Image (tube, rainbow, N blue to C red; front, side, top):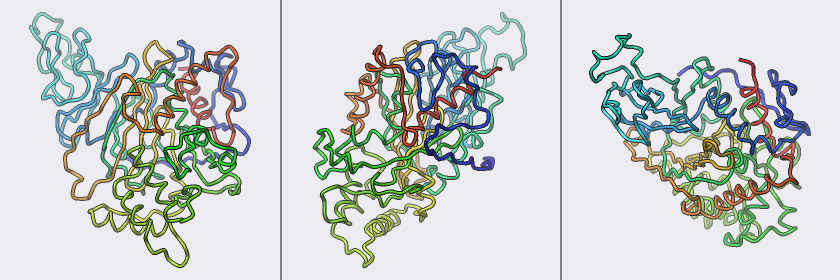
Length: 483
């Protein structure tokens, strides 16, 4: 892999919307799509014309995550990536090489493969033409009956492909910048969390009745947490009633930082207690009305794993359980004791444990928008990822995906894993738990509300919702640039 480019300078929000050199002049953007200060017009979500522009100008020019490397660990294993009208296949063509091609027969355009699987050659299901895994033509039926053009003209058309952190990305633009330059500063900030040593534990996709950006927006900020997920801070995690005024007063504050095309938010503590430039720390977790700080911290860790089945893992869940009755050092450092218990359990299981500094935790943030349509949530030993893809011709529908990753023991790095993606036509059938279901119901309600004549667009907090604004700002550079 190439070296990571210089880390992008962060843009911390202090009452102004973000801007960077090279941003698109407003006069180049049609008025109905034009951003204002902290304002995103609803036409960018509801207009079929705008979605067509996204598919034609945005998704064809950006790096898109397709799959994990463990999903294509064997030669000939492949994953199809569908996006609007596009179909691209990523395949391991040799032990140390991954390729990507437009998933289209050069004879009559038939799709060659579907979903995921393993092949020895690409065989067109229509007329039986064959291609080698390196994309070269292997068999043209009755070749003497065709115009004798150069063999390269029969080869599958390649798409740029690269990897980072165990993820496989593609880019349909042959002139696009290298992947690691595009992702900066994420590779550097995520390095302590060793995403390349994690493996998929589950992957679910489902249809959601909302625009693809609406599905992402609910995960790009934590401003909604007290309104949508009041149980997160409660001792009774089954109490899903609306937040009380006292609970609202104790809400968590999650300011935004933008890094050119990417952005992150960081949950830094209770708003009434934090000061400017407060940074994220994993210590700032707890459960209201639980007086024992060991139990308070442990409950917050365990609920995430029990309800969401990710971001925490069986080892951190066990460490939290041991923490409830553990002897705490004289300094009262509950989090330090949890880390000690979690570290010891991890090392015993053969996990490559790394000590992560406070500065590294702060840089990692809580959740990142990896532009354009991927969200990653880093944690030690485990992580979450979300992805949204538009449905062709329907701005009010998308495919949303959630996948959970867990770090495996050093001895299991090369062990083959059987990743089985699950798809559900209705998110209500996906067994998502309370937290994710609350988010999905919001997505539907937002769509209904946006269609109202009484609503003209999003008015965003310039401290806690600029991940959303930043996404639209960057999208304009791709959609409205002059080629």
